[in-house]
Image (cartoon, rainbow, N blue to C red; front, top):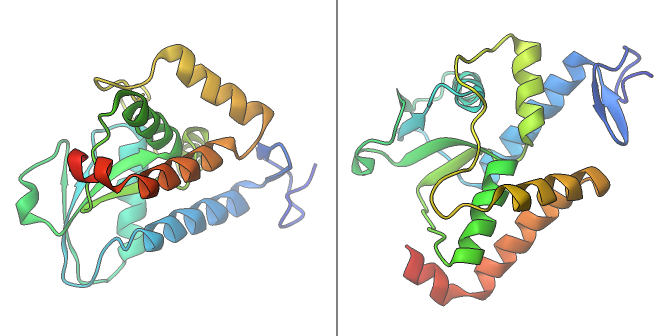
Length: 196
């Protein structure tokens, strides 16, 4: 099978086709950029904190952040955990789509979701497996095992598996679930106020 964008052999497969490594990287980076711009992520002169916990997601986020910012006049501090947030205009966390869906769903189910306006979820436009593929293609490694959304109040392992099964049967269901959770938040401004 050939890449959907060029004639090279497929190395990264999706249900509807696949990409060669080069086209996959291009598509992945474009989706991350689109997600960032929709979050109004940084402006010139901002001071930004990037949380890099050493996970693959953290390592990919750090490399992509530096690449995307290029010569933009932004001060970036990289730390393993959150610091005094008053020093920063934005805090960037290496949250991918899987993490976001699981944590947001847990928030709805447990009534504990926090809404933080200054936080940018760097990889929210891509799935966990895509982050791992990007890391493989780019030669990014991590000494840590893959992170999972297991913070207090997160959803159970069976619920997490159900979300993965839904995505396997109906590609795009994680994105649809995230959109539905966004709409849920928009319909309940009182809950947003009480959570922040």
